[in-house]
Length: 320
Image 1 (cartoon, rainbow, N blue to C red):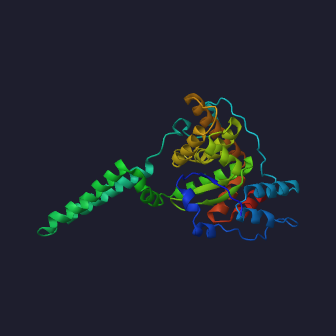
Image 2 (cartoon, one colour):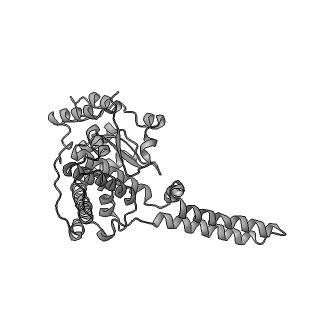
Image 3 (cartoon, rainbow, N blue to C red):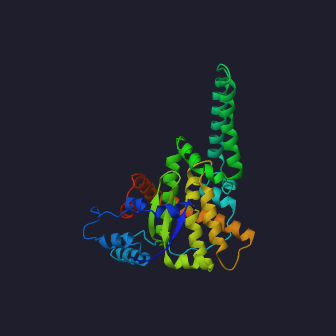
């Protein structure tokens, strides 16, 4: 088995979770029988199962040469340029000026619910006879104080609860699927092989495999060209949300990933250059997603059904 490391997008904490044996079984590649006649996907399936990024690239390159994987690495070259907010708005990004502002919708809804519920229960408990009417409201009221205290000092501890609570929003699961499918699709178009993904609440992510890029990231030697490619993939989820919704919810982890890549690049970027990189990456990714809207929707449908990586690739190529 080839030794490789992974680039995890959308959920920084998901990298460790994706390495567990249960997830390995979950995303185990199944033999595909729906490929076009005469197309053999066994080599690709084997390479993904072995987590061999070089073999995955070679297999997809061969499939492209025989005319099957037409969308694979169809956008291999990217070139950063100065980008304005007006261009994002023209593309169809809603409220482009607030894209980088972390959303507090889910957090606020969770806290208001906790405080409101405990307050209401405490009010009712105050009608209990004797000492119960004092101690029960006191104990129930302390729940809100504990939650607020944890949220102020260690907000990460509440993330799982907030993510689970967020599932009650009608658009939440749809947002996750669209967001992660955008990362998957753009990475595929740029020629970056995908190892795995998850749409599970609190673990949503897409993992890319590229040994060479990982070495550059860890050594802090990312050049401008590779930074641009990774920036476009990192901003793809944000761009997909911005094209469809008035308010982007899942941008925090994407911006975290982008900042990680920027910090590992040479030469260092100024604040203005970092801002322009973010805008340009959103514009480029959004353009790809908008131009391949049908493919993006087909991939969303496949990922929502927990399709394997090969099945997701088939969905992309069939919709092309």
